[in-house]
Length: 127
Image (spheres, rainbow, N blue to C red):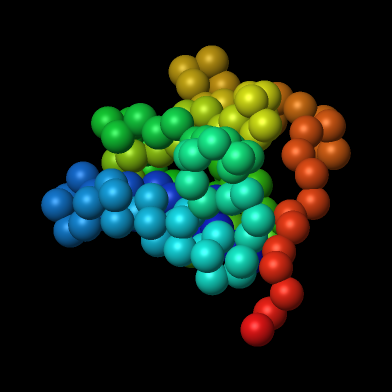
């Protein structure tokens, strides 16, 4: 779905505007999603959970451009919008898998090969 890769920066932009808190965004985009889909070991930083994390730079400001899109459709519904607050490092099972820095440019870069890190999501049966 176009725009998924910018959903976190959009929400962080709202944090920077004072429209919600960082805790709200964490709950909406991690804890609540894991709870809703009954994902086992996801959604919290606690003993026994996977501990996947995304580090964000709340001051990083950039305009969304289609050329930086990772989605196969090649466009983003937020194109042209300036957002402040972007992910700069994603870690899965303790392994850095994505980074965005001066060296990588706005698009960032993937640090691992597909399937190299991570495992299938486990979910409890629907009730």
